[in-house]
Length: 240
Image (cartoon, rainbow, N blue to C red; front, side, top):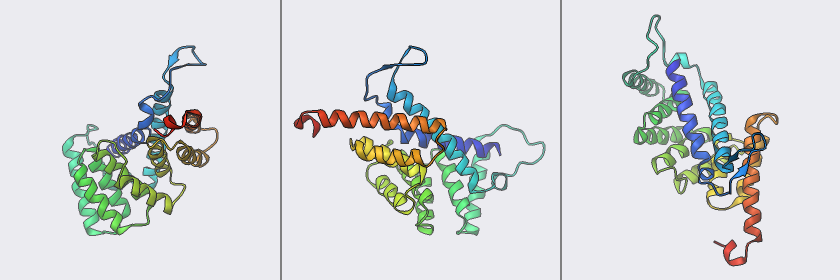
């Protein structure tokens, strides 16, 4: 069970940081904090909050995919320390599991995520490619695949990752991860109106009173501010 949570949290957080990466580059001036009066960097503070929120929500989604204990049995009296050898052993079991039953979506998903956490991006890409061939209409799988491809190319979502995100949204317009990534793609392309549209849809898909909603609202405000600045700039500068 412990190793499952390590994999889920690590991969979820990395995906969340990727989804909010454009905001970490700080496109706005520092603004005073209403709570403390201290000076904070708006975009980076927002990015961190969104990243952590996405991580928590992603972990909940991972749990819903299946029973972690069925994937990593915990014998009584087993030590709590998790080592590389144990992770590798889990991957071997997952490979055997999907070989035995290629229609096991949970097995494919956990295998790809475990490989990603270990930094085995080539293996993860191959696993996701095979899983997508078997389950081409699974929006979450497509979004996860896009995430891994982006990580493998330095966090850039251009090219194949962008196409996969578009496919995921075409299948499920309310997929949380796909919406987060799509908003990031648009933000990075300076298409702030589209970024706002994706993030508004993401915000509307989660509880109104959650901290995640507040963080997304801050992102929307940031994109709207940049959109207004772009609209009010001279024609030559706005086109840049």
